[in-house]
Length: 90
Image (cartoon, rainbow, N blue to C red; front, side, top):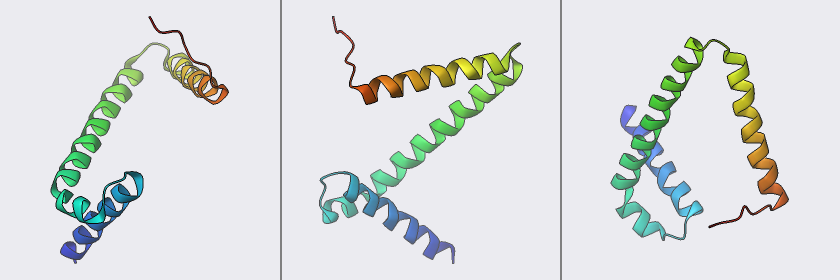
């Protein structure tokens, strides 16, 4: 049962990669081990930094203020992106 689940997960990773990029299906199948290791590395980093952020936020004096400021910055970036604002580059 585990082997079937792992096979289905790898197939899903390959299909999503083909859908998101311009790789051919054959090339994505050949790169499947690299794709799986890369996805595992990205997932591990997200979990690690999520735990670090959660721990830092729970130890902060004003966690609600910090969370609200983070959400405000994220909303500002999304809003400016949707409006098509380009910041000047030096």
